[in-house]
Amino acid sequence: MENINRRNFLAAGGAAAMLALPGCSSLPALSLTEAVKRLLTLSSQNAFAELMQPNGFFDSQVARISVPDRLGGTRVTNIATAMLRSRPIQKRLLKQVNRAAEKGAELAAPVIADTIRGMSIADAAAIIRGGDRAATDLLQSQLGTSLATQILPGVSQGLNLFDNEIINLVLGQVSDINFADISQDVTAKVSDAIYRSIGAQEAKIRANPQATNDPVLIAAFGLS
Image (cartoon, rainbow, N blue to C red; front, side):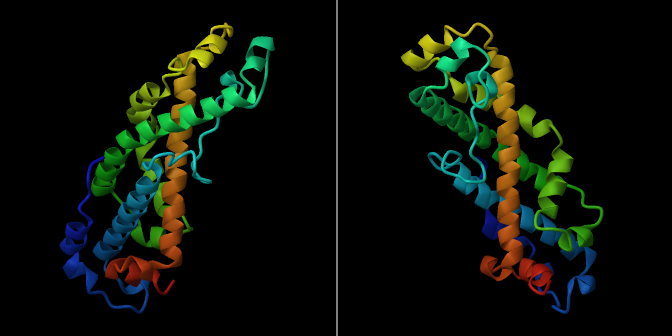
């Protein structure tokens, strides 16, 4: 994961940080744009710090990845697929897809960091005044489907569904398993989970900007 030097990042905006505090409408446009980027930077840093811990996705109420339907996740279509629904197999598969998510997150972190640094923000004031995850929604709209494309190799590598002898035996009995489709399914879920996690962190910062000790964020969100 690319290391974003937060201290230097904050120092670079030191001049803009000395803001008057009567409300967002009085802040310069440049400072509002800076505030949105800082909000997204800190939100994504906090999200990835949690997600990239061991079992970060598995232990998360926000980001846990479900087992794909083709692997017996939510529906059973035939007797062979039903074998996948046994508790030990499902537990193993659930762990596997969430470990694969961690591999995807490793690739996603630098992509998101680069996007935040270079993103255009047409109406920063609207983002500041927006909902709990307005900045995250902007980030997601600017990245589009490219995040899933970037993280697909990591997710596919992380799945390694045949690394367990029992799972290998069971999957061998299921004739309609398409592992490319499974990788795409898990990758889409990982992408969505990453945005959910960033959005949850954004909501926390908006609710308590003082906890960031960032004068720009405090000025932008502290009186909203």
